[in-house]
Length: 416
Image 1 (cartoon, rainbow, N blue to C red):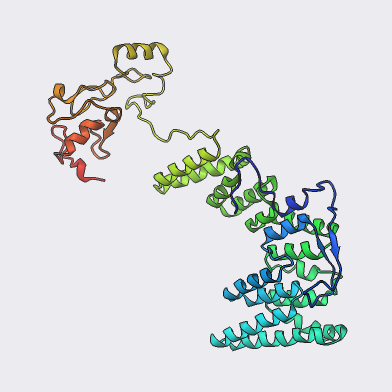
Image 2: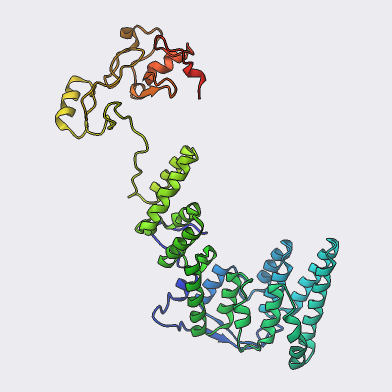
């Protein structure tokens, strides 16, 4: 999906077609009569407009009227060995000869793979298509009307239904469930009138939203309808990861929906459960970048062992306490909730919240410089629960493996 400013939306096919006249079903498409240059068949009128051309790009049909681009598209499908789709789209574009060439190439590949049934089918379909331009249309229709019902390939069946429609109704093709939605919508954008096109796209969009088919996002776009589609998708699958990554393209627009907030909260919780803390932190950073109003919640804090409250939450809010500690050059050395003293550092034996002295006054050896802010942080072993100032603990375990507390035999430095 193309990246876009996070405060805007991706309109999708439906929004693109409604850009010019959102209140009506007419947007001034130009009808192109039969006999267009470079096209062999079909003798059906097509419709074009800037909105339709943009919709075709969203559907992946970017070749337009350029045969060179169409040829590149068909070759890509053939390299993927999707010969049925290449043949059908060539027919939809009025290039029956090119469709026959795709089927012959498919038959050759099938023979190399020892799939003789598929090779015979491709050759039979190529033979049937070759008679379309060389015989009377009514005779060809009578002959092929019974054949198309027995064709199992949805794209090849759609190609026959398209040629047999005489341009009057394409419902057999547009309602072919096994053909991708993009190809069906692209066909509708090419051959349906404005009113028929808007009716078909609206009905298809409604069905995709209700069923939660994520493939329908190209149709709804990342709009309010797209959020509804994703909501049903998450309800059906529980896949909040995909939903979060998709709405991340329009973060500032999507964050106003409560369901979107719950997806991000659930996804962050999942990453925490999977111990993917670094990935979750990066995810929050990217979320903050796309939505400056987002404020990540505190994931961890140091709690008092007596009352369980955070030891840092109220000290900054109490101005009198803050001024008292700033004047003395120290920080709070007790819990702001219950006022019980905080634990002592197992190295310097000073209360954790008190700014520790340098190594000369604590009896530690070495040439450690005065502690920086990180050195004042809490650090403790998750096994024996003993700890102290981060810098003191780091210096201790640079020379020892066993816990500094007398009587404790925990080998803290060898544990994860």
